[in-house]
Every structure is written in structure tokens, then in C-alpha cells.
Length: 145
Image 1 (cartoon, rainbow, N blue to C red):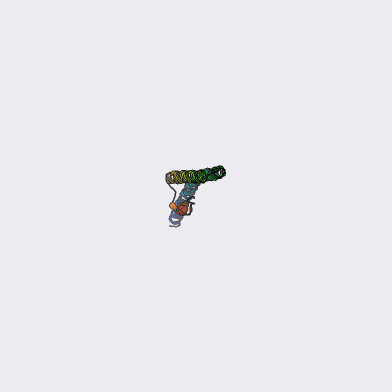
Image 2 (cartoon, rainbow, N blue to C red):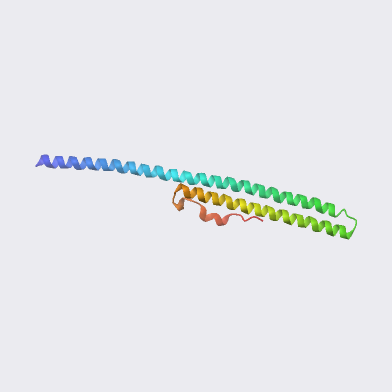
């Protein structure tokens, strides 16, 4: 009888050991899988932020160029010797400035939206839980001028 109890205990202990080992391997696999998914989302975030950074720089340069061109056009407008010449030059300077700023804004919005769209596609492919992504903060994004 004692031999049966010892044998049964040995069998049970062996099963527990095998189960624990399998559980540990499964947990390690899940951890690796989770860390891989997190790294994947991190790469997607990095690509998005790099694209947005470049778009912001281009927007700022375009707006700066618009201001520089407006200043130059206004200087030229005020060199006119007639009121009609000044009015025409001022109107043209401001019209060109407005069109340039609108174009810069449109380019910024298009670039920003493309960066977010690409990010969403890439993050979805990572198959990570939505809690890993920062997409809920997208409304904090600067809308431009």
C-alpha cells in the first residue's frame, strides 16, 4: 500500500513538474509575444512622429517664406508714387500671402493625416492591444494655422 502511495505521489509530482514547465514556457512565450507587439507599435509610433516632425518643419518653412515674401512685396508696394499703385501692391502682397499660408496649411493637414493613417495601418498589423497605442491622444495634435 505504501508503494502505491509513493508511486502515485511520484506520478503526480512528475505531472506537476511537467505542467509547471509547460506553463512557464507558455508564459515566456506570451511575454515575448507581448514585448514583440509593443516594440512593433513603438516602431509605428516612431515612424509617425518622424513624419509629423518633417511635416511641421516644412509647414513652418512655408509660413516663414510667405511672411518674407509678403514683407518684400509690401516694401515694393510702398515705393509706388501713386495711391492706386500702393493699393494694388498691398492687395497683391496680402493676396499672395493668404494663398501661400492656405497652401502650407493644406499641405500640413494632408501630411499629418497621412502620417496618422499610415500609423494606424502599421499598428493594426502589430496585433497589439489598443491600450498599447497612444491613438486616443490624436485630438491633441496641432491643427496648424
